[in-house]
Image (cartoon, rainbow, N blue to C red; front, side, top):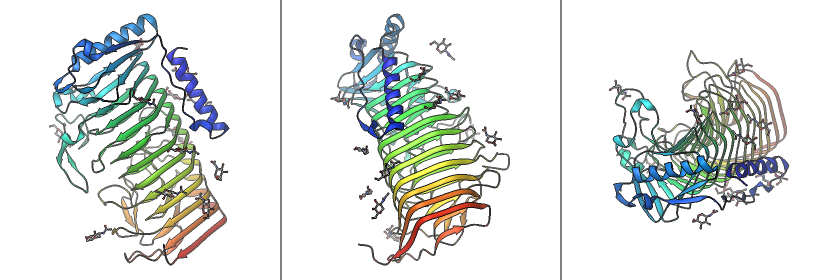
Length: 478
Ligand SMILES: *[C@@H]1O[C@H](CO)[C@@H](O)[C@H](O)[C@H]1NC(C)=O
Ligand SMILES: *[C@@H]1O[C@H](CO)[C@@H](O)[C@H](O)[C@H]1NC(C)=O
Ligand SMILES: *[C@@H]1O[C@H](CO)[C@@H](O)[C@H](O)[C@H]1NC(C)=O
Ligand SMILES: *[C@@H]1O[C@H](CO)[C@@H](O)[C@H](O)[C@H]1NC(C)=O
Ligand SMILES: *[C@@H]1O[C@H](CO)[C@@H](O)[C@H](O)[C@H]1NC(C)=O
Ligand SMILES: *[C@@H]1O[C@H](CO)[C@@H](O)[C@H](O)[C@H]1NC(C)=O
Ligand SMILES: *[C@@H]1O[C@H](CO)[C@@H](O)[C@H](O)[C@H]1NC(C)=O
Ligand SMILES: *[C@@H]1O[C@H](CO)[C@@H](O)[C@H](O)[C@H]1NC(C)=O
Ligand SMILES: *[C@@H]1O[C@H](CO)[C@@H](O)[C@H](O)[C@H]1NC(C)=O
Ligand SMILES: *[C@@H]1O[C@H](CO)[C@@H](O)[C@H](O)[C@H]1NC(C)=O
Ligand SMILES: *[C@@H]1O[C@H](CO)[C@@H](O)[C@H](O)[C@H]1NC(C)=O
Ligand SMILES: *[C@@H]1O[C@H](CO)[C@@H](O)[C@H](O)[C@H]1NC(C)=O
């Protein structure tokens, strides 16, 4: 079986078993064809000493492998034996799998001259652009040397270097991403550690059929824009068995130039100083058919989020079997420890209002320092939202003041609604709650007593149904 056929069958298996049962957690049967060629970067002159740049040796190996694929249609592996391979930007090409072995590390260059001109918007350590049948695996690591981009370490939020020289990149976000797949098809990233990105870690842009599994993403907890996986304008993406521990949004679908369909993320563990799962804020086109299942979110600033700001519409999204704990870290990061926050509002006066519809939250356990925030806007209502089988436990243990509601970016900003609320609802048409327990504690002395279980704010709140909803005060936590 050819590699692309294999990938397709993995996809079919994953997607098919998803709709059938929960048996998709069995390992996908990934095996590269036995007849593939393997070329070692050391045979092309790479030193792996971590001091000298191995860029041209590695790129020559990739290009030779790609010629093999072009002539034979079979996959070629580029293997990295034990060593540290310092490199400037690399181009991964069709039919090539990078095999970074267990004791090998690809080290991204920290110098501005290691990347193309700022105007190219193509700053990645490794990028596949317009490629088919590509992969990265091997059990080793790709390391962006993110700490070399820190100007001042700060537990609240690191201050980062900016490579803005012309104004072509925005604000303080001018650093290279780690790994990118752009305009590509049939990409598989598995059994690899991606660590210390300077900026976003894994970026999937306008791709079709991407599988990310058994990947560890180890970013820096204090670094802004240290996103885990950003999925933009892409269809048919599967993320499973990943471990993501990072500063900024961990799994972040966005739409800039086209819609995003069919993303599933399952069986993963996440900790982040921002949102564990976040749709947006870039949201110019639609999001449809997303499934998030069996995910643990640990001590994150926010759990499940939508920040729709640019007129794209969101529909048909399921969150199931999710265990969320959220807490405040620092007000300089967006969020106030909301375990679920679903928001749509126009970013600014020129933006459109996107709608959000048909969301299912089922089997959700929440332990958090703040309540749930559901906020549509007058021409972008939240409709057909269902909460089923949820235990929400609210208790404060950090110092930040209660009552502030975070509408950022744009919109109303940070607003003091003064109440400390279990579930806030505004501009909602169709909200069904079934078998949901809301427990709250008054055993803290943080001057932040919970005082409103359900808050219907003045706006459209229509077609609301509560069946088996229990709200109670717990005086003592053990
Ligand atoms: C993606 O996978 C689907 C399902 O296996 C297949 O029909 C489709 O051709 C693939 N797309 C590309 C661009 O290879
Ligand atoms: C993408 O690659 C194909 C060959 O695989 C080529 O024909 C096409 O021109 C490339 N597209 C772009 C935009 O470079
Ligand atoms: C990951 O790679 C290591 C080193 O090559 C290998 O021993 C291990 O079996 C691989 N694990 C998986 C799940 O493929
Ligand atoms: C980026 O660089 C340009 C050109 O030097 C400068 O005009 C602009 O103010 C810089 N922007 C930021 C946010 O630093
Ligand atoms: C994703 O699917 C939509 C709907 O078919 C299509 O408009 C869009 O071009 C697809 N995107 C990619 C990257 O293939
Ligand atoms: C999304 O998945 C559905 C159901 O499997 C399929 O019918 C549809 O064609 C897919 N959409 C895209 C854009 O691939
Ligand atoms: C849920 O995911 C974890 C890995 O995070 C896995 O060990 C466990 O088997 C999965 N549970 C189910 C029911 O699939
Ligand atoms: C979102 O839906 C509205 C109402 O149907 C529609 O006018 C708008 O064009 C949609 N947005 C996009 C990006 O397609
Ligand atoms: C949820 O995760 C916490 C750790 O964050 C763990 O202590 C708890 O047992 C988990 N609860 C469920 C129902 O899985
Ligand atoms: C909620 O708590 C009840 C009672 O402790 C338990 O039976 C149920 O499994 C829990 N459900 C979830 C989704 O945590
Ligand atoms: C929710 O949990 C119940 C009890 O554990 C289980 O029977 C049901 O299949 C789960 N629902 C989903 C959508 O996973
Ligand atoms: C609360 O603030 C005090 C004084 O700023 C600090 O000493 C303490 O560690 C903080 N506690 C928590 C839980 O953040």
